[in-house]
Image 1 (tube, rainbow, N blue to C red):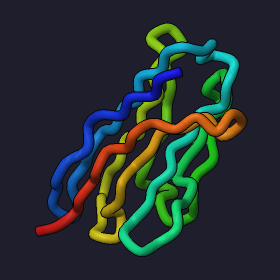
Image 2: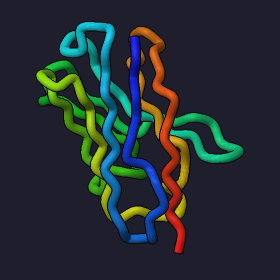
Image 3: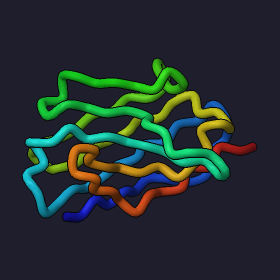
Image 4: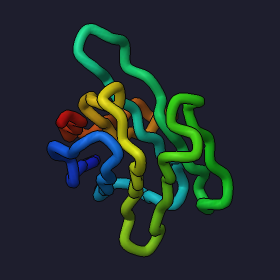
Length: 113
């Protein structure tokens, strides 16, 4: 099983980033996919998740209206579009399969002027 995140970086407050996660080694379309994040000194928190067919999503209150999760069951990818970024969104972002405990290596997102 491999989950490989990409798209992190440094962005100014109010800016946008698009994170992608490529999945392999399992039947992607059978699993709810999730994004989580961990800021320095804080516990890891669920950011967003999407069901197997892509028509059901769930977001942390802190990101509702700003982040959008989507998936492509042909390309085996899950994407997190992040808009109106704030300094408090700074964290390492992880793609994972909650049901199986499979995690990617994470990608750093830093929001700073």
